[in-house]
Length: 290
Image (cartoon, rainbow, N blue to C red; front, side):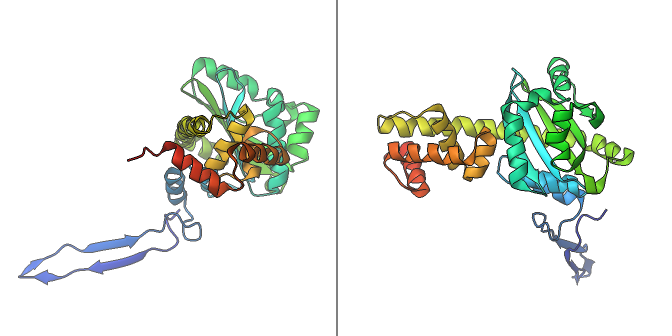
């Protein structure tokens, strides 16, 4: 599979003073352009470049999609207590419907995921595992809600341990593309160490960013002698990351309308009316006067 569909090349072969120069080969590789980057290697470069950013899951989805047809990719990080702490999703289908299902999974239904027992086992053994569950073994409710209703036909999961947490990277096929073939499972199995390493670094980056943002939010509140609720802290953290209300709701497992309510309360306490003012106060809270 070629690295790029197109590369601009310049070759120079000159002689000076009787001695020949080696040919100079210059390639311009637009690795962050999906229109020109079609191979796994190029898309993997995009994945690495976007670790710790909101575009990571999108690029991971496209990288995997260059190898096999896939409708959804989700990443769930479970805390040592085996409860979800991070939920990321990229969908090629109905994003609103996928987000709603993700919230339901995050809130409660992760306990009914057939992979949940494997997640507990990985927590003990710390070994990476590739899980391809038989959908017929799912409970009728779980199969209908998270597969049939979403027109999902099959699921392949990479599970790995990461500094005490467990990360589940899930790849889904829709009914138009059937089940995973043996060759597709072999391909994902071969690349699983790369995928899990990138996902682990991304989750670590998100955790570090959360610590930094918590310090900023604390400084903002202390400067005005006010306090925020836990949910207001969560929403403020999402806004400072540049997330939309929908994305914040998905990551927290709450409705978008609830995010908007918490944001209004947050702004009222800070006596502001816009996101720009929030960023300004965040900047002022961490700038040391000269």
